[in-house]
Amino acid sequence: MRTALVIGTGLVGTSAALALAGRGIHVHLADHDPASARTAAALGAGTEEPPEGPVDLAVIAVPPAHTASVLAGAMRDGAARGYLDVASVKGGPRRELEALGLDLTPYIGTHPMAGKERSGPLAATGDLFEGRPWVLTPTRDTDTEVLNLALELVAVCKAVPVVMDADAHDRAVALVSHTPQLISSMVAARLEEADETAVRLCGQGIRDVTRIAASDPRMWVEILSANPGPVADVLAGIATDLDETVRALRGLQSAEEEKRRAGTAGIEDVLRRGNAGRVRVPGKHGAGPASYEVVAVLISDRPGELARIFADAGRAGVNIEDVRIEHATGQQAGLVQLMVEPSAAAALGSALTGRGWSLRP
Image (cartoon, rainbow, N blue to C red; front, side, top):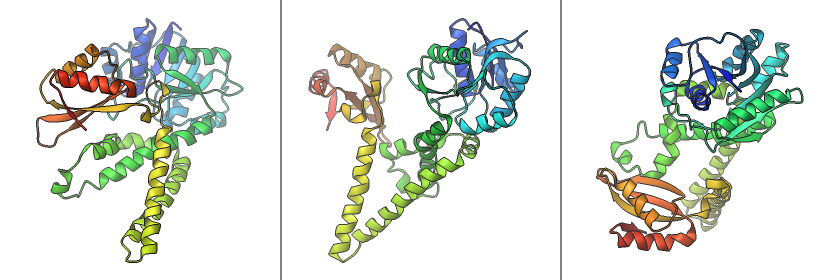
């Protein structure tokens, strides 16, 4: 690949363009908002100048509702040898393109599983996709050359290719991406009218659950509008769990021993099923979240403290697999949770204590 056209210079499009440009590929940028394309170009993602002829690959990075129409326009213009989109929904756009009667041999649907709460070109980074799954949904009609171009893009972005059927992809993202967004927003919505005293008690748990609730509502309305059925199916299952959990909690309030026992069993069941599901979530290098042990360290809010603790861990010969920070409300301090291999936890704790750090259970 020597040339590319990126149509849509938001977070994903600009990030892909930055990765391509960083590998010496000549990238042309286009967007319905010229200011967005100018911003992406100023960041080094490519040029606003239109290509003089067909490019090797056109990357369509627009919302799902507009993916098919923008793709169709680019294909009719003969803009590229190969075409792909990065929309978060795959089945709908493909069926729209089929209904238009277009030759889809030069097209492949894709979806990089990466993003941020922020949107737009200023949030873009060339390493956004590094180590993240990038779904490819080829059909029997997809030209081999186009599949190879898509794989080259994935490699340039240092992502991990995953081949799936388009509709299977849509059911999967309904479960692991779209429904969590709604659940996060629903929990965060409870805080809007909450008493200030309650809000001041917010800890890491509520921060974890509501982090993605900061996402752009307009963007998510477009995404959910393109995948409503699978998301509704997942939510229906969660609604059943919620009803059963409410009944179990009411049972715990009962004066009858039998109802309290049933309530306890119901709560325990949902918590155990949650444990079992959580274990299946891949962590670093595909390891499950239960693979690491936590070393919790009290840390002050002074410049350089995080760098110092990482350096001390490095001197102890311990690799930090993951890290989380829990901020103390109203204090200039926090708790850093260092995730390490279980065999290294004792050595790290001892080394950090010896260097003056205060550990917490």
